[in-house]
Image (cartoon, helix red, strand yellow):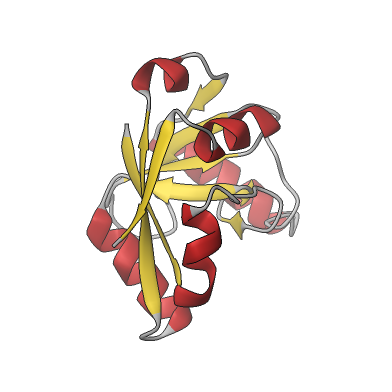
Length: 138
């Protein structure tokens, strides 16, 4: 499975070196490390957040290992409802679904633009930081 994470140039070396953490990130579905299926969205997100000093982390994760995770798959309406509730409760920095990964459409926009993956657990961090994931910068 290949996915992308847009970030600042100052963080990319640690991410490539396998120091990915889930407890610093927050987003529309709560606390976690977010990646997505589309390179251009990762670049765009990083540019909007960090101006011009941006990089993209490419994660090539072993498909079999990903399939072994406890994954919550949400459709657009489920992810929209979850986002609405998380926003209402002001828990974007703390909400967890208590699974390894949440797989859902990106719902913070007015149109469907792609899939996102929210990695939450220690198990998923071990996978992303371990030998079964190739981490590169572009």
